Length: 153
Image (cartoon, rainbow, N blue to C red; front, side):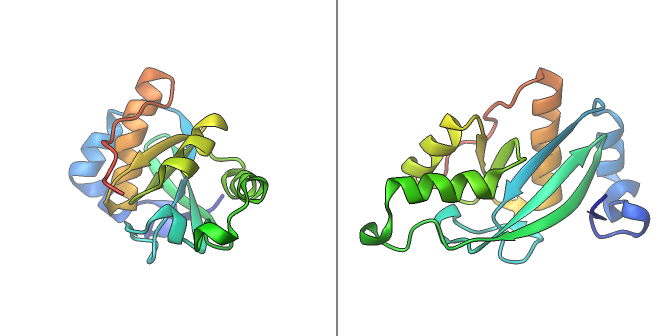
């Protein structure tokens, strides 16, 4: 399995305080999220500006980093963005992921991702905390639901 979030033996270093109590109450389950981040610590990058995407797995109260996926930025300007090319790019980037977690995202990529069955979450904050927040909603409801308000573009 992938690298644990910052701690030895794949354990989060925050498991000894508030997050430990919070994750103990989360139901068992698993999902994967594609995250836009410039530093692999915070959700802090606009989806369309990301050249590297990070995949994390939530599993039974733990958050694991799985891999980074390099890709050309989704769109660097209107003239270089063909719809078929965008679709192929998005399909490859989000393969195997249930959700996308990003600082901001335009309407067009959001609609394309949702048409692919991916739930889009817009947030800013520590990746592990944001994923645990999503997990509480996702797993308890048995579906991916939008618990974040979209940020302005």
